[in-house]
Image (cartoon, rainbow, N blue to C red):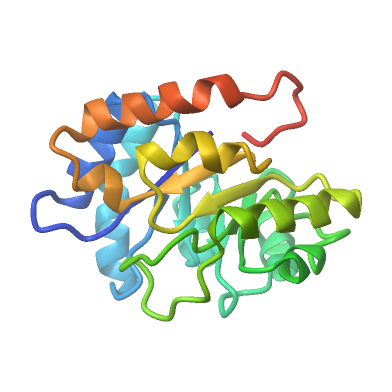
Length: 215
């Protein structure tokens, strides 16, 4: 599975970014505008909600639980300093998709027994998307973390994030993660629509056959 995370760009507006990845077949978008006011965020969301609806794509907000509820989107992604996922679940109800950020196996284990839908585990490598970057994990790191978490009988879907490119996908997926989140590699590609298609093609052999996998 591929989650596209919006990111400010000199070339495209955020609605243009979303339109392109949806054209490329992406079905999962995270609207991330860390420095925007709620009003700026709301205005962009109003433009991309219809695009996601037309393409049967999931839309989640980075943080902004109250706005996600107000605008009836599918859920939220919560960083370590955002609202607790327990509180978000209480507010948003059982149907909402709630994802959380993790950098270590211990971070993921802390969610055991919590009603969290996936974790974004990263960063894979250095990325400019995040201001306060945690230590990079790399391929060996992913393998160790996935083995430890699965060894503890936790089946929580793990999405790799942080500086990932198309070329990385086969090796990253071989570590046992369930999907990838991408931003800059897609936006900065010569043809973002085609690049998104190629990412999804690279992910196709790794699609789970069971229904327990994430959305």
